[in-house]
Length: 589
Image (cartoon, rainbow, N blue to C red; front, side, top):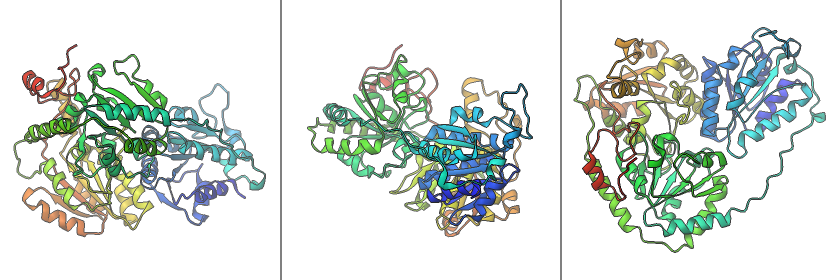
């Protein structure tokens, strides 16, 4: 059997139905084998970065291994950004890179290259994969594949890479004589007593808060989280990666918290006396930059598959009192069992206080002055919420479109929002949505992207058209990099450099480009026509490109300025208001 055919059959046997990539001299045998393998299809990307991101989007949707195949050298190095997305967000992906023939590898020679396009991708990718290996001899292929697959899913999932020299790809092997990989035995870790202890303290708290994080969906725990929230009976806050895990109207859903989050969530987390963190690593975007100010009177319990994520705060001002190292699919049944048997302190006063914060802060208005020919981003997201069907998956990019979506979209039961939460490259959402549409061609998907992000992945519009993917692509066209403009206004007296066309950016006529690629195109620039246009857009099967003219003056508020605790976002409320709203004393250095 040809080795490349063994590789692709292995993937097909594991349930992989799609691979993404681009052809190149060192990958022709792998792609030839894809074309001959029943049950697996090839989606050709326009750039290798998009291929890695499409594999990531495929894996987030399906829970299966996402696979990208590229040639050596630049083909391989172009995978790096997408690989980082998968690694940081715990998404199982495999990068299969071709390499120069084994006899052309430079080995230990003191030269930069021996073979044409030879590049040491194992070293380059080593810090952003769980396993990166170059095949040393054809007979190792079963071992390397099985280990890569195991590593992609075990513990905290993530990206893996296998680099296969060209001559090995075309080698003839005997599958019956290959040595396999034997996963190490896992120590039985008895976490039941730890969880019982944590839950007793949680239910004794007067101001408890549950934090849902992205680890509850990558990997998907398969748990009914609405029912879990009901069982726990405490207010729930979410990271942005988990903002879709409870319906917006669930009575215990208090929204998100963090640097760009609404004020209510920040007041909830800052005044809590116990935080139960499920699947959240408490990133800096959640805690703010002044760690000693974060949830400063709360006892914090973290349940995480990575001990390092719980230990990283030691010596930096946040005390993690309870650390349970386990996957959430093992912990949640034990949490639910403890909850059903628990004696509970009353939390009615705490919920009433949160209700007052909701009322107080809901009156704030951060809208810019209306501008003719533009739509308010928050009004658009609110209207969009009415049209995206229950159960549909949304892919969002980074920047303003993601912030407005996470803070204003009203999620229905079963809807999912995916983004590259921790690497956050511009140009993520379109190729990620393509990965999803390739996995489920019968399903429709909503893709949200900014003008800066679309410039990076613009050619992938052609991919969506070629495969007639059921994508609704909404471009948030504010004619600039909005978050960067706001950052320069905050810190550098609005000395704009490279953030809009007057300061150096170059954009294109996006609707004209979309039409030239064969997309039906709609422009939304009149709020009074918004609902009628959305009704027409969602009646289309797709692909369809929607240019939404966003007011360039729209800013992202509230926002935390570095040096302040989470309860003191901009626009500032003033010390007297903050002191009045806080349950615990205000923060002082």
